[in-house]
Image (cartoon, rainbow, N blue to C red; front, side, top):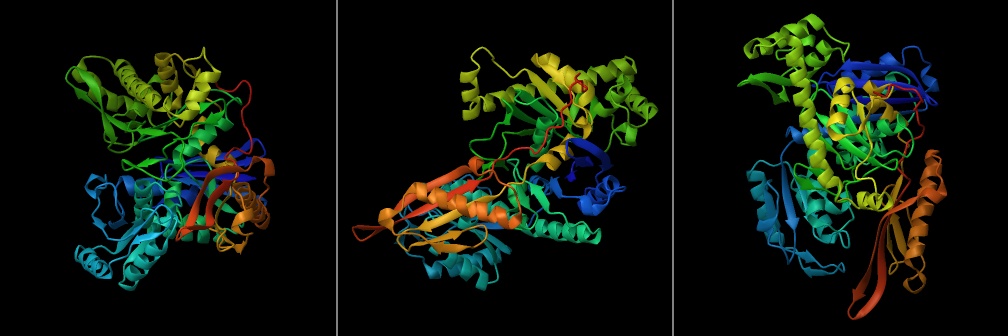
Amino acid sequence: MYIGIDVGGTFTDAVLIDKDRVISKTKFPTVHDNLLLSLLEALDRVTDQVDNSLIERVVISTTLITNLIVQNKYEPVALVLEPGPGLNPRDYPFKEDTFIIDGAIDYRGRQIIPLDKRQLDLTISEIKKKGYRKAAIVGKFSGRNNAHEIEVGNIFNRAGIITELGHKVSGRLNFLRRAATTMLTVATRDEHVKFVDTVNKAFRDRQITAPIFILKADGGTLSLEDSKKAPVETVFSGPAASTLGAMALSPEGEDTVVMDIGGTTTDLALILSGKPVLASKGATVKGYYTSITSYAVRSVPVGGDTAVAVKGNDIDLLYERKGPAYCFGGPYPTPTDALLVLGYYSHGNVEAAKEGLVKLAEPLGCDVKTVAQKILDKFSQSITGAIEDMFLSWEQEPAYRVWELLHPTQIRPQNIIGVGGAAPGITQAVARLINCTPVIPEHAEVANAIGAAVAQPTLKATLRIDTGEGLYTVEENGNQGSVSKFSSFREEDAVRLAKEQLLKMADDLHVPVDTGSVEVTHSEVFNVIRGFTTTGRIYHVTVQTPRKILTRLYKQGGQDA
């Protein structure tokens, strides 16, 4: 049996799945200043009648990291960059305090400018004077030679500054994306580690020994312990969960817009020929491109709890949540109240919802049902505008262009799947506006938790192979070994070695892997030059098991709208 938990939204959802059947499900109002309490309450509800020894796996999706970043609830970080010659640092996009240090490694991994130790001491003094306790240290070509980053990090650590180094976060070359990702990693790690440790203890207390994973932005998974090293990989795990959930609850191979209507936001994603579209430039966080692989998703700031007010002779969405819906005791009428009054929603106090809508109806001189329909129309138009805007981005993605070539007569996907508690009613209205078929699958209200539960565990192996030294290192577990010398070693040998190491890791963790399905997600090679002679090659190769769902829960004759 599998458990999926989606924690951090307006509600915390949990499901227990056995094969292709939902055994139990729950929605619990999230206590936002205590995510753990919400997670455990939902866990206890779905496992109430279950022998915990039968649980094979738990996967959690959470907005913890997203919320920390979006709400700036993290300790400020000093950004220490070694760019070397090239782009003027004044053109960098960062809003954080940025300290540029001398020194440079070139694209071949050679030191071309040494570090200036005196300047480093002055930089540390300035950083401390500004009150920083943490720093992200990133060199432009540190993936090819990390000596400068390590040396700077050691000096900063001896001075009492907590650091993260760029080459540990990503071995890829894009300097600015790596800098942003490193800064976000060191900024969020402490809170994430606290969350992970507390979750581990709580599961042990409940005698649940099944492996626990956390969902990544690309629909893959990390073990809970491994996520401590890369907390920002879990950003956008909520939208990834809803995308996987929509896949699990819909027919295989369809082209579909996914619309997850939450209390505060609505998340949008796109599935083409049964596969979610990835963002080719990586996740965008705080307006920065990052090294994080992510589905091409967008969060629109309207949801079931969005406050509504009168503006002139009409109603207007305030694009913020000022509390729960009126029908749940909140201070403002919301789309959830409108859905309840119109019969598209069945939870909450309908008389309270009507009372809230009267506050809008009286100034406009109309009745409650008319104002409820106005809210629904305004909400639907807002989502439709966001979908049309998102298509401009999706159509630039390589996966969309391939799909267009294969479907020359089909301009847009034919379905829109609505998931989340407020999906009934809104999905139909949005589908009419964009001329799609509305689909509201069974269990739509807990689709995120289902997506987490059915996400197939993924494993990744990142190898750095130095043929000059005749050595390789596996980044994920620190394993080392020897390779043949430069003259006989080729790129295909590097990929084969990376796959062998991945399969060994899978065997150790008892994770079944189809050897033919392992993907090469990154491959880079460059020569090492000493004097005028090529003395070896360095390969940087990443392989990963595919991101997919374990089972499909779609049933013919579901609740298509």
